[in-house]
Length: 244
Image 1: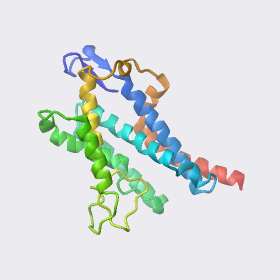
Image 2: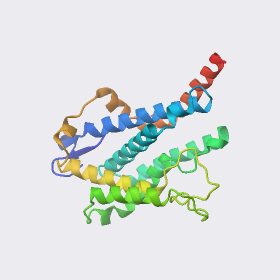
Image 3: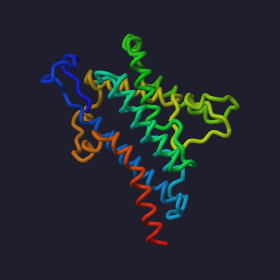
Image 4: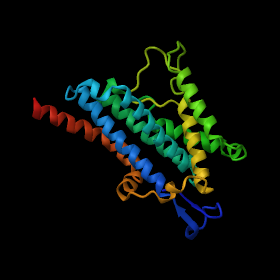
């Protein structure tokens, strides 16, 4: 949970303020991400028609809620005591996901998914933090760069070994794909959000936002992400068996 003291210091537990709004938004985004992945499994096994999941509305919403998830992770990094440890933990979990998909579902092998992206972003932010704290981040600049690189890197390029950055060859595939470009700019937008929250510059509704269920979900997103896909796949296979 994101906390910050009124003086800007995180060292005094009694002075820390809880920003429940970040947990609510993170919980909502992971809840909808799980629902989307479950829908993907149902479509993959023919239990739902493709147009239910793959349509302009859901395509846009999927990017929106993934962006919320990445941005909230960036906001949390501004309150973290140790982003290096945080980044390494995320990358170790990402390695587990990659190994599991490589062994169990080679066609859905995740080379650089959202955990890979967030782990690298946390380490990159830890490296750049002294510089970024001297440079005022402009939220519109972060968003414009996000959409610019998303557009520039939407085609494939015949350049090898840069898929982690966002430059893909035509033969590249990944079951989940969140390259550093453009997603690091959404992460930096989240860094701005964290600073704005601590400076009391966000709208008043954010500080009043509460939802115990989503707060609980939002405080356990890593475990939910790691466990949801095997559970969704298992439930899908059970439905396939029951429905013939």
